[in-house]
Amino acid sequence: MDRKAILEELKKVLAPYTVSKAMLDSINEQTDLIRDLRINSASLVDIIIDAEEKYNIEFDAESIEKITSVGTCIDIIVEKMNQRV
Amino acid sequence: MISAGNDIVALNSHSARAGSKRFYSKILCDPELVLYNGQMQLALPLYQYVWLIWSVKESVYKFQQQNNPLLPFAPKKMTVQNVLLSEDGAPGFSENSGNEITEWRNNRSCHCTIISHNQIFYTRSFICSDYIHTVANSHPCFDNISWRVRQIVQTDYHTQSGEVRSFLLEQLRDIFPGTLLEIGKHAAGYPFLLNNGSAMPVRLSFTHDEQFIAYSFNLPPGNR
Image (tube, rainbow over all chains, first blue to last red; front, side, top):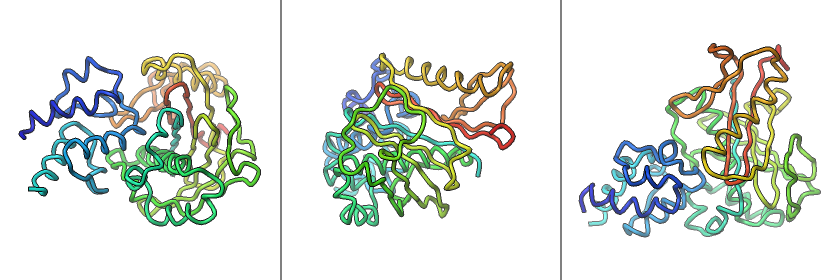
């Protein structure tokens, strides 16, 4: 799965947690999850668990602290999917 | 360290998964689980404890971030050392909150001590069935910190953001009469206070979640 495909799937993971649907349609790797998508920080763990289930991976503590933008989230998903192979 | 940090969690909108191991294992570190499995489990349901620890860590992170904007939020690198619940409040905290809480009531407060990036911080939390609100400080005395919580009707982001700014400015205009106060926002996301375009030495923190908005600020000694 390439980064573009992961981004499209990630939109579905993020959708329940953002009220900014218009912004969600136009997200890119630079989009900040909290500042741009207006996602409440208390929802971040829910998003991480949803992403873990979707991609069959696990985010460790070191990975979680790197998550700020859509791009960093994709980085971690790619890294963990590659570790799985 | 002069700064400000506060955090509010609307319990009804976030509690569904908090009691599951998969969820809390991403927030709590081992000493915090030991703390809960001791006396704390008699005082708080697990999901409230998880959100209490989250709120404590988030408020301390906001406090530290104002002096280190690049600091990542790493909840498992922060360790709550001590949780002191007032005896009258445990267990349950089942009463609904009023619309505005301006001071701690002894039967509903919680004091924590936490280590983050080798520094010790202190927090005070208000716990009720609707929300948990926490204020952080680098000193155990909170005389320099002011805070308030308010319930609002509309819960969209723009309303929350506008209302919390108005709410804070109401109090600051009483403290600094005759000033032209405005709120600015740092690129890292935290707010700062301006008077007629010039920065003021007052540290601010905002938080909002669902129908709850809250702020804290830290006044310089001459204005207390």
